[in-house]
Length: 437
Image 1: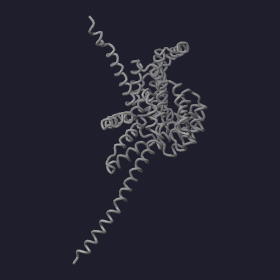
Image 2 (image 1 turned 135 degrees about the vertical axis):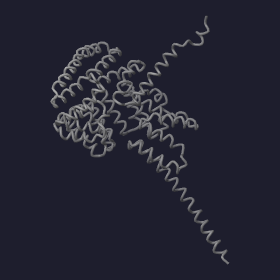
Image 3 (image 1 turned 90 degrees about the vertical axis):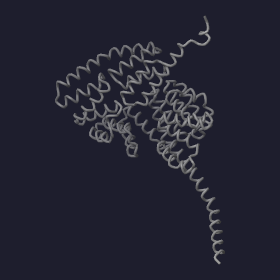
Image 4 (image 1 turned 120 degrees about the vertical axis):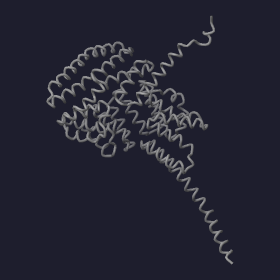
């Protein structure tokens, strides 16, 4: 009696299932492309790789964990500078049979940006085809690598190619600004960063670099306004906050600068130049106790650095500890006595530009006694010209260890091990010479 209604209900359910299956499939495909496209936008356009990785990780189980997203995740970790995860994902993709250039491309770009652009240069054509519309990632890593090597002509050539291949690319304008800053053409750098902002008004990196150039040119009002835009729009990294404070301090607003610096979550981990700025600001705002604590941190890193000794001496003087203050002033004077030796080495460099050991040794002297961040700049130039000098790599590793940047320090330690291995291999006799009597 009831078989007919049951049969009709089963038919309706079957029809609904048939109609729903294509709809579910269409939704699934649409969701897949949305996750892929939005994650790419976060990684490449919005400079938010961590959010892009989180989105991929969240949706991957629902998408049967597509292998294509492993490469995109590796790209996200490349943008974050996480070499360990990039290495692991590259090995996994290579083991699954992904073409070698595609599998290794995130690692190649990471190494290029760190100063080894040769492999990207050799595979430039395939990499540009692989990245397609995001080819600026390849050229950006190439330009950064050439700049880290000190090869300015090669960087300029890569920038010209970039402008020809990708017209009106804001990243090209940004790196042109970085290049102009490196060669100290600050007026051209301003124009390039403004061009990058015109093409991408939300480009926070271009605005930050623009503000730094304004600071370098002593255009403190323009620097303050640019840093304020960054802070007001949620870009409140320690570098932005300290830059904002520096511009305020130079305009005579010590109290406002101090208020900005209070936003820093942990000033003890700031790089020494920024921490010295915090210390100077607190001194100007009559916060001698805090300034004294910060000067002590600086001297723990660089016990003989003249500017930090002076900061400690001034802090102690404001606290009324005259005897201790005079001791630090005397030690600062001893470090200052190294200045004529450094000046002589600078004069020698004008006539001996190819003497890399002279540049390295002068940088070491400055780093330890006069200006740690300025001294390491000379050491970096020597390293880019001769990356196989053991002492240069050791000095750079020591600098970054003291500054708490352990990842960069480990990169230099790894370079030292590679140099040592190459020396050992060169000392081993070849099979041909080993068989000779």
